Length: 169
Image 1 (cartoon, one colour):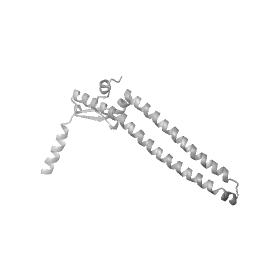
Image 2: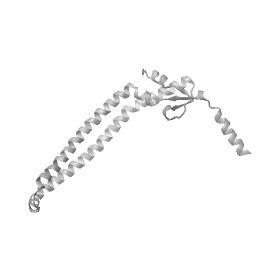
Image 3: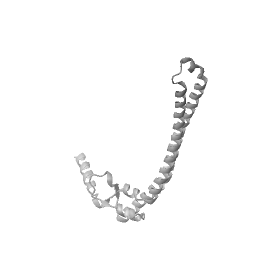
Image 4: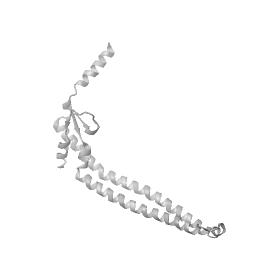
């Protein structure tokens, strides 16, 4: 009987929550139409493209070494290859150094882009969260849920209100 009472209390206690307590917001829609996000994306894209260009240059330098070694060894006898072995070993060392440089650059570039993205997106996300809270408080909502994760939403959609609060048309 005690267990049944606890279950009944839990069940009827949750019924007290109504659709008027819930709001939904499409954060992706708000974020994608936020002017600061558009400029942040453009800055990040430019940064990524610059890094991709630099990485391509480094990969081309590696390919040039491979092609040079291939040209110097192709069709040569073992004794001819043996005669240029010091040069080939130097090229191998140069190749390994440049390959490590490429790996280091890739890691540094990824870190730089990630840090810049965090620096640009952090304030944007804070503004959006603050706007959601402001609109939810004004409408008397207790809970706001991301609209895109719900199969069915019976709450108040505050997406337009949040966009208006942020000055987004």
